Length: 455
Ligand code: DOR
Ligand code: ZN
Image (spheres, rainbow, N blue to C red):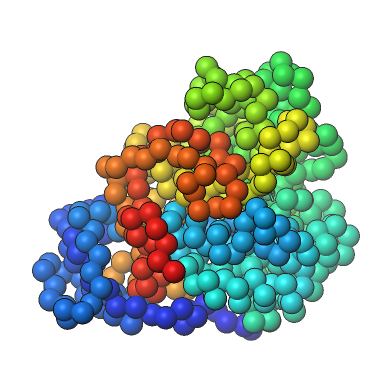
């Protein structure tokens, strides 16, 4: 693939002394000296020049900066709901150092003019490395392949393609896309939803949707595409990535495909790990926030919130590596698009600033992952899957200083209006979250600290 291998060098590289942090939450606190954007020294009581910026970690955990393979930044086109700047701020505050911005913008990111602009804007903001995702098909219409090669060879060096929001449902087109992607050395990420099975569907097909009179979205709509695309990837000798895996059956199919040696990877969202469709019933149901009413479209998302057994299977699959990584599917929407009739409301919820706490709650607290495991699923695996060589790296001398400092002891209460996003469609309003991001560093530059972005 031509084009840059990373956005390294786009933002000034920094020198910082981080005092008293525990890499991966292990051992006694150490100091980490960062010079020219790289880790220069790790030790106790490091001497540093008087004028160097000091971050007091106060015993915080330090992890490699998080990488989100699935973010909607809404620019170009819906800058009333999110911009590259506001979304980058949310990412930095959430501990992210790289995000992949999905292609369902207006205009669609199906050509290199759009993808290069998104990339340049991300560099200008400089809070996080913004990698544009290119559309697989022109206009996300599922009819004709987009100019993937042009986007891959442009300034942005697009390395991931997806029609996310929509499924590439035509099997022949998907086959061709996988063949091209293999040749280009890029990744296809599939929003697995057989559209013939989800006509009018707004909620998970099951007892809750039946009780509420909402049109159901069957598990098979996802699973039939997961198995189909695994078979297409097998025959093409290509890789395929499954966006937002949401069902127990998808986990079984991923396990089967991996056992066959098929190059399939998958992500799970924090909301599919924490929430289930009982939220649609309103207050008094499990995990509901205060004052939540039935039919509240804040809980509407694609794929829909599923059932308890799906959550259990997804948590175990993430722990086992059957599901490779966490991705937020951060999906900002305007108030008028969420505060309306359930069937009319837009699907999606904010995710960047609440991802880590939810992983702590659903995976670390029950003992399914330790902090090394968090580094794996939130940083190392996503960086490997998309081929970023400067992210998800070990915390070691000579490595890029893309780092996240986490205080696991302090909790905080979510208020949508206080999040950095221009939208406030969080399903976690007034919920208490464990763990706080103390600081984020991108190539040694502090991008977020104590809840504020630095630029
Ligand atoms: O809930 C969702 N929202 N799922 C998607 O696949 C797309 C996203 C969006 O763009 O709002
Ligand atoms: Zn999607």
